[in-house]
Length: 102
Length: 102
DNA sequence: TAAATAGGTAACTTTAAAGTTACTCATTCA
DNA sequence: TGAATGAGTAACTTTAAAGTTACCTATTTA
Image (tube, rainbow over all chains, first blue to last red; front, top):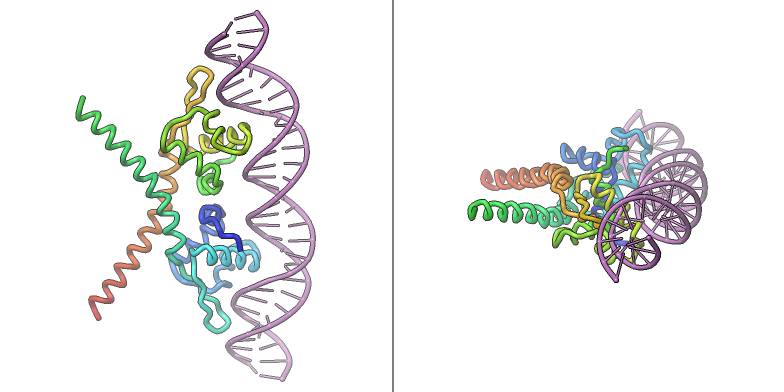
């Protein structure tokens, strides 16, 4: 399967909403689906994408599949963010250095 | 115009590559376009999207349009990231608290 | 001032993503 | 054990995004 792009994964508002739900509590798939207008199979697809890209884990308990947040996907995003965080921090420090000189 | 979703904006690999280029130096549009296989109008569209969503600023110098990174777009992403950073930090602290008890 | 350079935009095509319905399997419970 | 519940998946449709080409304007320079 083609490696999923984490940026592509969180581009979808529904998927971000799912992540937010799961940041409050772990939930079985039907409960998640109840929070959306769209059909359960649609939610199911989103969950598969989130699982394949490392944002959630799914554990089967009887006939229920519980979803939990998984740090892996977030780490990839954070690495990207950190680069630009550092860019802006460095820029600010540079400005401060100029101020000190002046 | 419909408000642009910053997550949607950075979902495109070309746009992220543009941001990376601009983290090294500010550049006029043609120079940016030279770094890509795609046509200049395609790059131009990406730049408009990046500008409209607050990731870059464009300043006209004669017939050249210089592109620079703009912090606004990044801040929106960072706010989102911080929520989940906090989620994982809190979770770790909770685990540590359990360890201390046990 | 004509040619070259820098860039915007409209019209169109292609493609992939997100949704749907219909079907299937597995588990639970009455 | 049959009905209900929880969930996966295949086949299809629709839509929006990303790219293209063609054409236009503005600025610079020879």
